[in-house]
View 1 (tube, helix red, strand yellow):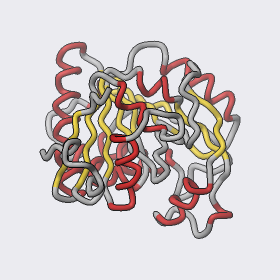
View 2: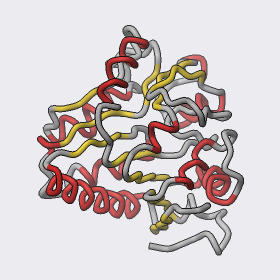
View 3: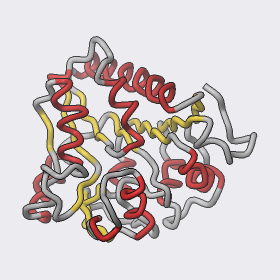
Length: 253
């Protein structure tokens, strides 16, 4: 079932550059072919180097790009350092001049935001989705056991303690009690509807999750394992995140 293209780079900076070059090529092609492109943007520490490199790629007409995002905490204001809206404004939207963005509001009326953004998202296909994989193998904020069946574009989900502790360890929150217990997440099936998926997963702390996703059973208990069912997905790893992979699975870029 493994259909993922696997690229292993020396370090997370090289990973970010290689993934950004890939994303830029895809964006230019889509814009040339159909004038506009729709993307899903991921957030979090795993995307730092990628977004920095992507926003510096030349010859991308960002005025023709629409962006949605994967997830957002419930009850966290957009001014909070951990807000994914704040993250995207600072690391993508303001740097590129993007004007067509549809961001989830978990601080107001989450259900209203889900309806409005979800309806817009499903109005036509997404061309490219960017994603990461959590330490518990989550995809977006779909923690295990993930819902592989729902056709809803976004869900309100409960965050497990492994996921929440990851946010503390990455420096977004001071302690576990500060991390919201609920979030809005794009559903697994909605992510899989994208025509192309690029997954960026650096760092040794993700190595076990990567191994479980690529070598174990495809199961809701390992949410990101479902990426192996997509016909056009590429996972970018560095040597640290790929360290536990069996030789037959590894492919060096």
